[in-house]
Image (cartoon, rainbow, N blue to C red; front, side, top):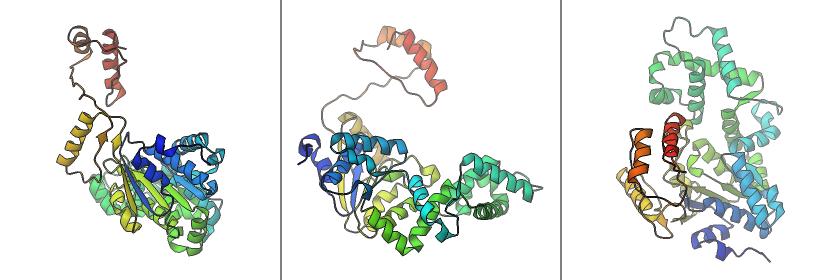
Length: 372
């Protein structure tokens, strides 16, 4: 018998998501809607009904996020929740490829190249080939690394990548393409993979090897993916192949935001999930516990005017007023405004800015005005 009174600690939409333990599930969850809470309680619930923790796969974009969720789940009910397989797409790829890399022509003891290793390899290949001689403007090593990484995450289209973001280097696209081939050959010859390779080769492995798909499908009978709007097409394919056999895949994401578009993330994955998993249930977490209704009404209107195609709308669980907006030309005017024109607030205030260089004078001005 569970000690968790799910119906008392979760709202109806969260409860439905937690209690849905079979089949594909898309959970639309904006910021402040309790998505992390929902994931935590669902892990606890799966373990409670008898799913082996090691058969649960929780994919997040940071190891820290996965660790914190599993600790919370363990604290709720069963310490065995700590044994859930939690981590990032890259950590999953590393674990899997350590067992099956030989099927792709790599040694199982392959070396992983981090960003500095990648740039050093690129620098050496340019020096050896002298491909930058007599060609005019040539990208710096860091830029080349960005181009190759972005092209890999977009599915290999170097031309599309350079046309969109590095058009100034299109005159040397042939040299960049040659570098890409040299870099690929260098990694294969030395049994090395960079972070992009981990994801690409995991997808290749799942596509090519039916026996591996079946084994991983048996190992991970329940899959959950956080921040699904930040996955790219390659990662969405990985989720599809992992869940192909059992279809017990739950993805959670915000249909109105994505912060990883620079590496090919595609929020449309949210809309396309039901086509990857026909019959998927869709649950919307629309009650917001962070922002008041005036703010949510305003942001909903902005998204509509911007032509954002979202599935859900945000709503607040209580009342609240719209925040007052003030603009200042500098710390002196901030100080005077707070001293003469602003009402006293009985609670701490905070300020945000686009960079520390902007934040520092603003913070100093507020301190001069004795604003905590």
